[in-house]
Length: 181
Image (cartoon, rainbow, N blue to C red; front, side, top):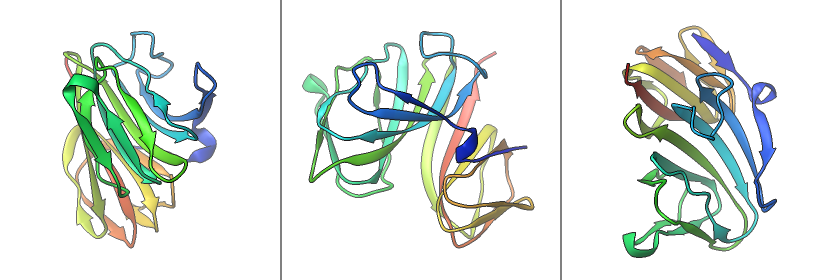
């Protein structure tokens, strides 16, 4: 079981300088998005409408933590993220652009390398039972959580094989991850 908090995360500007991403976890540790990663969990501050980075061969899930956003996937349609904590999934192969609805937003992202890893993103409110997974990552989004004797505040995370129960008054992002051997 591993517990991390905001001081452990890695912030980086976008390639185009238009915003910034905070990487919570990447697997394997030290991997990069250049192709050797299996999965990554991050948050992004999106100050303006514009294109999203393409990630060929990658499955994506995204939810808004604050603000509102419309994703335009061209021929694959649009997805409206009007309220927080409603995950959507889409292919990193798609040319996607985001249109802010009413100002900047912050989003929560999960990427997994298709064929080598899979993920499922959901949101739960404590108290709640937690699923078991090859790897389970719980990120406290608001309030306080207690899981297996660990107390998590906002933006703290716990990584382990899951199971058990989350207690407290918190709301959490739950990411179930599986990698192929």
